Each structure stands twice: as C-alpha cells, then as structure tokens.
Image (tube, rainbow, N blue to C red; front, side):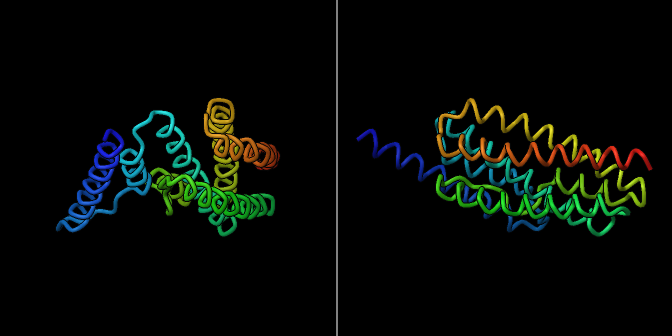
Length: 196
C-alpha cells in the first residue's frame, strides 16, 4: 500500500509540473525559460531522495558546462585572431560534444532530465565574449577557459569522491582526465595570449 501511494504521489507531482509548464508556455507574454531551470524542476518532481537529486543536479550542471564549451568553442573558431585560440576552440568543441553525447546517454539511463540547449548563464558568457575582438577576444577566451575548467574540475572531483551512484561517479572520474588536459591546454593558450 505504501509503494502504491509513493507511485501515485510521484505521478501526481510529475503531472502537476508538466501542467504548470504547459500553461506557463501558453501565456500571452511567452518568454523562453532557462533550459537549466526546466531540467531542475523536472528532476525535483522525480527524485525525493537527496542523493538522487544531488546526482541529477550534477548531471544538469555538467550538461550546462558541455553546452557552453561547445558554443564558446565555435565562437573562438569564428572570432579568434590566433591559430592557438582557434585550435583550442575546435578541440574543446569536439571534446565537449563527445562528452555531451556520453552524458545524454547516462542521463537517459538514470531518467534524469538535462538541458539540451545553452542556458541563460551560458548565453550571457557567450554575449560578453562576442563583444570583444582581436587580441582582447583571444585573451578573454583563454582566461575564460582557464577559469571555467578550474571550476569544472572542482565540481567533478567532488562528485568523483562523494557520489553514491557508481555510474555517475565513474563518468566523473573518466571526465576528469579530459578536463585536466583541457585546463593544461587552456593555460598554454593563455600564456601565448599574454605574450602578444
């Protein structure tokens, strides 16, 4: 009987969230919702346990990182002045596209909703960088990649030790190898940009 109530409660929450999102999207002042916020609401409705919600939040954050790196990498290839910035952008776009594909499969397997398009924060970073040109663009991109990869590594390291889900924990551990390489390459690019 308790399991039946739990299932009914979970279905009710999921239906309620879906209806709220449906009605909100039909309003006269239709404003695009942040994909990250939508994913977080879906996951809150699905996961009552704190650990599962933390795992879901990590995957949401990881997707945000990947989507932002893909978008910024494309911008670096278009607006970068130097070959090392363009090459870093291409490498990061390719690596984070692969990471996003792996993450999408993992999230689907865990029934976790993740963003599928850049979030509002990602778009803000993109717009800020897009305003720059020449050496200013190259330096800002390299600085941003160093900072963002340091932040990503800290988040992935935490999950690699704290997560109770072996699949998510292993994905974080494997991803850390690439993120550390990305940081090293970003630092090299940053030094070259600072020498200009």
